Amino acid sequence: MSVRSALATGAGRLAHWGLSSVLHRNASQLPGRLALAIDPQLMRELARKARRASVVVCGTNGKTTTNNVIAAALEGAGNVVLCNRVGANMAPGVVSALLPGREADFAVMEADELSTVHILPQLRPDYLVLLNLFRDQLDRAGEIDRVQDTIVRALLGSSGTTLVVNGDDPLCVSVAMRAAAGGTRVLSFGIGEDLGLRQDRVPEARFCQVCGAELEYLYRSYAQLGAFRCPNGDFARPTLDFVATGVEVGREGVSFDVSGPGIAPGSRVSAGFGGTYMVYNLLAAFAATSLLGVDVADFQRTLDGYHPENGRLQRFEVGGREVVLNLAKNPAGLNQNLSLLEQDEREKALFVLVNDNANDGTDVSWIWDVDFERMVEGGRAPLVFAGGTRANDVQVRMKYAGIDAQVCESVSEVVGRLSGVPTDRPLYVLANYSALFPAKEELERQGGRR
Image (cartoon, rainbow, N blue to C red; front, side):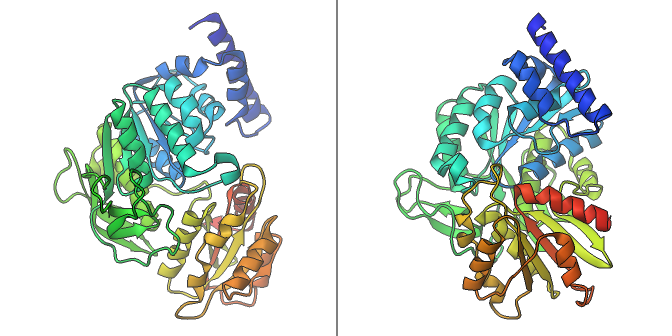
């Protein structure tokens, strides 16, 4: 290690100690910022701490959960893992996660899509797991083609990295095709059967990534994900390496059979959380961990003991009422949350929190692409509340969907307004980035984790 790298590492570790041990503050970003200011190439040096392998998880939705499940499964198999568990997914967050301690067996890092071009060439991971691509934070990220271009450049700058890609997502498959043309090894995962689910009215990608013709589907799982092909024959879902079949999705969780290289026939995994999108997240985590030597039994033991603690599908009990908290930051994510509500046959209440802070994206026009209308089809709509800095925008959008939403300032206010409602009616709280953790803190103060 050079003198500059040693100085940067020491300064970063001191900042990490001061924030976490003295001030009892979050140390997921600032130590990395300080260290990179001293040595911009420090990540390359710290990458050597992962003796056996490193993995980067990327995608619009689900990367924090997938990243943390991979890390937990590797730890459950007896390994030491460095991981940015709280979702600090830009270069400073990755460096902050690599700074503490000595060597580890593995590094498992979540990466923001646009940050991959700064992370992959430095970290040189063995695997990049690409989950999905959807429109998100258009004022910051721009359109999908910019995100795709960035990930391709990141892969081409990181020779030796294998791309583990969602083969059901045409936007991800386009990235894989371009990266493979540049020499990247590609493995794919996906769902191998028609789940017979209601489809989103506004899919993210309808057209061939090669010629522009409208794609045909044998079936779709959700959004643009499914068994797709171009009618002109120049673009299609690849042959899947890791496949989920026998999929069961319900209020109590998900389960499915898994097949892939070296996987014993009849292997099945299950988890007590999630919806259809979670099948993809868990299949991606399973693919990555199996490539790193974790067997099905160890992976399942991880899921048996895994409890979300970062606001993603986290459950609380407040005054005898079940409260489910989840992140919803773009149309695809919120539509999948609405699917979760549909799978819960109980009468329920819903609180949608939308902020427009810098880390959320200041453009909230995406709420008009959310299929709120499905909530009033075929029965009684849930009680709906709107919150966040753009609560009135949400209220207006709900009005056009035929829903009378009440504006509330906080989760506590919503809970108060539900005081006369039977406690067997659950409350779902769906919040975007900057609204998620304040809601989580409120719920932790009011009641215990369920």
